[in-house]
Image 1: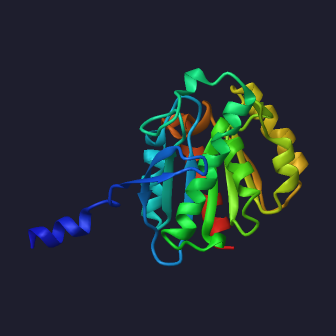
Image 2 (image 1 turned 45 degrees about the vertical axis):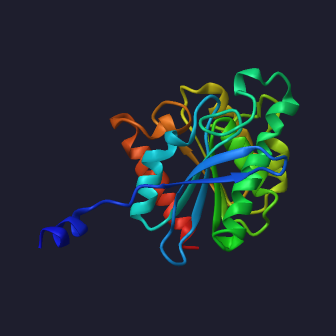
Length: 232
């Protein structure tokens, strides 16, 4: 009886650490949570200097809905290989992170046999820009979620990707983060797709917009919008 009670009250299972390589041979580490049958998988890309752990709360909430997640340590961050991000000196060095996003998607498609139309690309800060650029390579990807994107982060640009991507995009930013907020407004106008959205957080940047009482309403609104797009 005790074991049965524990099974009933337990939350979503913790993630599994997985490893794969980018096309140029960088060893990447990620946290994988499998979806329920037929549900989407969110590829989660962190911000500058962060790592897969910043997505833990998001992943737990997604798991409660049956959605899968793959939160990646991009090269130079967390447990992944390559030179540390503090050594990146050129836009070309930052652009290589796109290969890490592509490798994560490739792992989902080939190793976990996730159909492309069940893949959602999501990112925070520079990870948002990278997520959308990766989504452009998967025409059947379900939609993209951009938390605090920027018009140009370290040479990783947003407008060209917005113009290329044909599926819904959810932009989110807080007014106190002026650059990301203005970038999101401009990008939403450029996207001009009724299925997407521009959501306004209470405060903060990237996944920080999901933290604390001031952002509870925003977090609820974001997950409601994601559920709406998942159900399409």
